[in-house]
Length: 371
Image 1 (cartoon, rainbow, N blue to C red):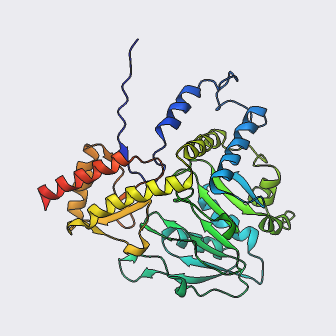
Image 2 (image 1 turned 60 degrees about the horizontal axis):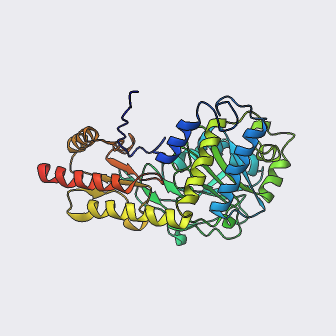
Image 3 (image 1 turned 90 degrees about the vertical axis):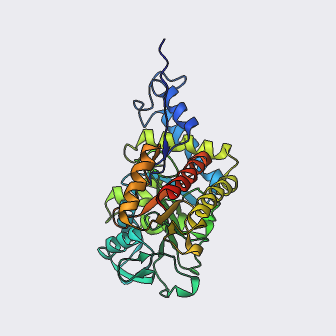
């Protein structure tokens, strides 16, 4: 029998991103037939008891990980976080009301543009700088100018492109807080009770691409339920929640993958342990970025992301060489987003500490040869 040797490189991609190796191995073992089922998860009916069990276990593990209160529903949707840019205002922004948005990067800018197609939107704070600098930080609490009686306040908890992150949940008073947490969901402890709704594409920290996690409070669902007669069914949170994410055919394999990752996260010790590991990885890499001045971090230090470490070199030519040589050395996905350039290393939950060590070693060697 021929043995296939798999050479896995270190994947720094911003998403779809690295998955835990034990999860990939379990997927491989079960792909032809789920244990005791005789069919692949790619083949089973979403109405079967088998898939309903997969769905229920995924929800239960996420609820346990994030300590989701009983007055919140967990819903698995399609369309990515970009569809949520429209669903949030369609469900929650009524005529005569205003929604506040905190503008901290490219994704929040997109969310604002989509929401303006639905209703009245006000930018409660923006950290965008003139010229080519763009966004380098998130706003302080004192910079938030909130609308009294706002329909909701929308934030992006982590800015994948710019490498910035809220270090704690923003205080928005009594206003319903909506968080796009696509790139840091379940990467550290979170107080779900301070949010009205949290949404996140799975493909960074949770599992394969194709499913979007929504954690939504009961009172938000009531606002959504009041729009059943006028809102398209597929865009109504209450309909999906009332049907336990089975109103239509869900992305079954992606949900299965999320369930496996949730169990893996619990096996790591939960979000406190995962958050500590993520902080250690980021601290190690930021230490190298700051060590000599050869590399320059792009985000303000008090706004730095633990998920997406962004930095520059002296010239774009040097950055291109860095990416080329790093890729050849088995360090993939380090090219910064096309809108900002530079270098970006994404260190999501499943990214191993050994990969950070390998990158630091490469950075020092590259500096020695090019500095």
